[in-house]
Amino acid sequence: MKRALTFFLIAVLLLCADGLYAQTDPGLKPDEEFNVFLLAIAIAFICIVVGATLVGSMLVSMALLVLLGLVAAGVLSAGVLVGLYRKSIGAGFKTVVAVTGCLSGILIGEIAFFLINRIYHLHLSGVAVLGIGGFCGLVGGMVLGLVLFQLIRAFLDYCRAKLSF
Image 1 (cartoon, one colour):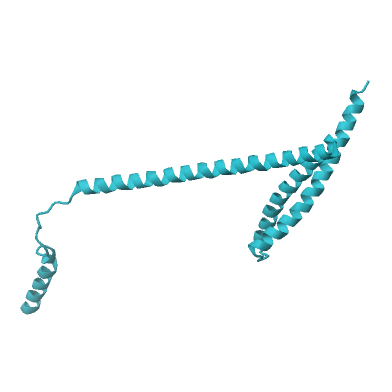
Image 2 (cartoon, rainbow, N blue to C red; image 1 turned 180 degrees about the vertical axis):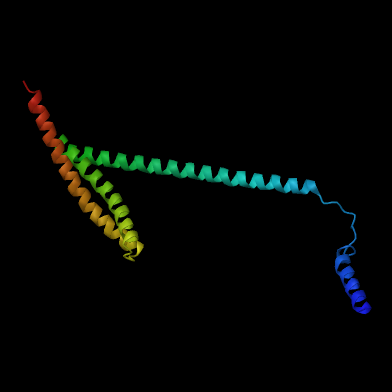
Protein backbone atom coordinates (compact mmCIF):
# COMPACT_ATOMS: atom_id res chain seq x y z
CA MET A 1 0.00 0.00 0.00
CA LYS A 2 2.86 2.29 0.79
CA ARG A 3 4.35 1.66 -2.64
CA ALA A 4 1.05 2.42 -4.40
CA LEU A 5 0.59 5.65 -2.46
CA THR A 6 4.16 6.75 -3.20
CA PHE A 7 3.73 5.94 -6.88
CA PHE A 8 0.43 7.86 -6.97
CA LEU A 9 1.95 10.97 -5.32
CA ILE A 10 4.98 10.93 -7.62
CA ALA A 11 2.70 10.60 -10.66
CA VAL A 12 0.50 13.51 -9.49
CA LEU A 13 3.53 15.72 -8.84
CA LEU A 14 5.00 14.91 -12.24
CA LEU A 15 1.73 15.68 -13.99
CA CYS A 16 1.19 18.93 -12.07
CA ALA A 17 4.77 20.16 -12.24
CA ASP A 18 5.08 19.59 -15.98
CA GLY A 19 4.19 23.20 -16.82
CA LEU A 20 6.70 24.65 -14.38
CA TYR A 21 9.80 23.51 -16.21
CA ALA A 22 8.52 23.41 -19.80
CA GLN A 23 10.38 26.48 -21.07
CA THR A 24 12.42 29.27 -19.67
CA ASP A 25 11.77 32.92 -20.43
CA PRO A 26 13.63 33.80 -23.65
CA GLY A 27 14.06 37.37 -22.50
CA LEU A 28 12.49 38.85 -25.66
CA LYS A 29 9.47 41.06 -25.24
CA PRO A 30 6.74 40.97 -27.92
CA ASP A 31 6.98 43.89 -30.34
CA GLU A 32 3.77 45.84 -29.77
CA GLU A 33 4.67 48.55 -32.27
CA PHE A 34 4.82 46.00 -35.07
CA ASN A 35 1.16 45.08 -34.41
CA VAL A 36 0.18 48.74 -34.65
CA PHE A 37 2.15 49.01 -37.89
CA LEU A 38 0.29 45.99 -39.31
CA LEU A 39 -3.00 47.59 -38.30
CA ALA A 40 -2.02 50.81 -40.08
CA ILE A 41 -1.13 48.86 -43.24
CA ALA A 42 -4.43 46.96 -43.09
CA ILE A 43 -6.43 50.17 -42.68
CA ALA A 44 -4.57 51.78 -45.60
CA PHE A 45 -5.24 48.73 -47.77
CA ILE A 46 -8.96 48.76 -46.92
CA CYS A 47 -9.14 52.50 -47.67
CA ILE A 48 -7.45 51.97 -51.04
CA VAL A 49 -9.86 49.14 -51.91
CA VAL A 50 -12.92 51.19 -50.93
CA GLY A 51 -11.60 54.23 -52.81
CA ALA A 52 -10.90 52.20 -55.94
CA THR A 53 -14.38 50.71 -55.75
CA LEU A 54 -15.96 54.16 -55.47
CA VAL A 55 -13.89 55.56 -58.33
CA GLY A 56 -14.69 52.53 -60.50
CA SER A 57 -18.40 52.75 -59.82
CA MET A 58 -18.38 56.47 -60.59
CA LEU A 59 -16.58 55.83 -63.89
CA VAL A 60 -19.06 53.12 -64.85
CA SER A 61 -21.98 55.39 -63.92
CA MET A 62 -20.55 58.19 -66.06
CA ALA A 63 -20.02 55.79 -68.97
CA LEU A 64 -23.62 54.56 -68.70
CA LEU A 65 -24.91 58.15 -68.60
CA VAL A 66 -22.89 59.01 -71.70
CA LEU A 67 -24.23 55.88 -73.43
CA LEU A 68 -27.79 56.79 -72.44
CA GLY A 69 -27.27 60.31 -73.78
CA LEU A 70 -25.92 59.00 -77.09
CA VAL A 71 -28.86 56.62 -77.49
CA ALA A 72 -31.33 59.41 -76.71
CA ALA A 73 -29.62 61.71 -79.19
CA GLY A 74 -29.73 58.94 -81.82
CA VAL A 75 -33.43 58.34 -81.29
CA LEU A 76 -34.25 62.04 -81.49
CA SER A 77 -32.08 62.59 -84.55
CA ALA A 78 -33.73 59.61 -86.30
CA GLY A 79 -37.13 61.12 -85.54
CA VAL A 80 -36.05 64.51 -86.88
CA LEU A 81 -34.62 62.94 -90.05
CA VAL A 82 -37.79 60.93 -90.69
CA GLY A 83 -39.87 64.05 -90.06
CA LEU A 84 -37.78 66.05 -92.53
CA TYR A 85 -37.81 63.28 -95.13
CA ARG A 86 -41.59 62.85 -95.02
CA LYS A 87 -42.19 66.57 -94.37
CA SER A 88 -44.40 65.71 -91.41
CA ILE A 89 -43.95 66.37 -87.72
CA GLY A 90 -46.37 63.52 -86.96
CA ALA A 91 -44.20 60.99 -88.80
CA GLY A 92 -41.12 62.11 -86.89
CA PHE A 93 -42.97 61.92 -83.57
CA LYS A 94 -44.37 58.50 -84.49
CA THR A 95 -40.83 57.29 -85.22
CA VAL A 96 -39.53 58.58 -81.89
CA VAL A 97 -42.38 56.90 -79.98
CA ALA A 98 -41.97 53.61 -81.90
CA VAL A 99 -38.18 53.45 -81.46
CA THR A 100 -38.46 54.35 -77.77
CA GLY A 101 -41.14 51.67 -77.34
CA CYS A 102 -38.93 49.09 -79.09
CA LEU A 103 -35.84 49.88 -77.00
CA SER A 104 -37.72 49.91 -73.71
CA GLY A 105 -39.66 46.78 -74.74
CA ILE A 106 -36.42 44.91 -75.46
CA LEU A 107 -35.03 45.84 -72.05
CA ILE A 108 -38.23 44.99 -70.18
CA GLY A 109 -38.72 41.77 -72.18
CA GLU A 110 -35.21 40.52 -71.41
CA ILE A 111 -35.56 41.27 -67.70
CA ALA A 112 -39.03 39.68 -67.55
CA PHE A 113 -37.96 36.53 -69.40
CA PHE A 114 -34.86 36.23 -67.22
CA LEU A 115 -37.10 36.33 -64.14
CA ILE A 116 -39.51 33.82 -65.71
CA ASN A 117 -36.57 31.51 -66.46
CA ARG A 118 -35.34 31.77 -62.85
CA ILE A 119 -38.75 31.41 -61.19
CA TYR A 120 -40.08 28.50 -63.29
CA HIS A 121 -36.69 26.74 -63.69
CA LEU A 122 -36.87 26.51 -67.49
CA HIS A 123 -33.09 25.79 -67.69
CA LEU A 124 -32.56 27.85 -70.83
CA SER A 125 -29.12 29.19 -71.72
CA GLY A 126 -28.30 32.87 -71.32
CA VAL A 127 -28.25 33.45 -75.08
CA ALA A 128 -31.69 31.85 -75.47
CA VAL A 129 -33.09 33.96 -72.64
CA LEU A 130 -31.69 37.14 -74.22
CA GLY A 131 -32.93 36.20 -77.68
CA ILE A 132 -36.45 35.16 -76.69
CA GLY A 133 -36.90 38.00 -74.22
CA GLY A 134 -35.46 40.54 -76.66
CA PHE A 135 -37.67 39.44 -79.55
CA CYS A 136 -40.84 39.32 -77.44
CA GLY A 137 -39.95 42.70 -75.95
CA LEU A 138 -39.29 44.14 -79.41
CA VAL A 139 -42.69 43.06 -80.71
CA GLY A 140 -44.46 44.15 -77.53
CA GLY A 141 -42.63 47.48 -77.47
CA MET A 142 -43.47 48.16 -81.10
CA VAL A 143 -47.16 47.43 -80.51
CA LEU A 144 -47.11 49.50 -77.31
CA GLY A 145 -45.42 52.39 -79.15
CA LEU A 146 -47.98 52.39 -81.94
CA VAL A 147 -50.89 52.16 -79.48
CA LEU A 148 -49.37 54.97 -77.45
CA PHE A 149 -49.00 57.09 -80.59
CA GLN A 150 -52.68 56.52 -81.45
CA LEU A 151 -53.70 57.43 -77.89
CA ILE A 152 -51.64 60.63 -78.01
CA ARG A 153 -53.12 61.52 -81.40
CA ALA A 154 -56.68 60.93 -80.11
CA PHE A 155 -55.95 63.01 -77.00
CA LEU A 156 -54.55 65.88 -79.08
CA ASP A 157 -57.55 65.75 -81.45
CA TYR A 158 -59.86 65.88 -78.42
CA CYS A 159 -57.95 68.86 -77.00
CA ARG A 160 -58.07 70.65 -80.37
CA ALA A 161 -61.84 70.11 -80.57
CA LYS A 162 -62.38 71.47 -77.08
CA LEU A 163 -60.09 74.47 -77.61
CA SER A 164 -61.50 75.50 -81.01
CA PHE A 165 -64.00 78.33 -80.83
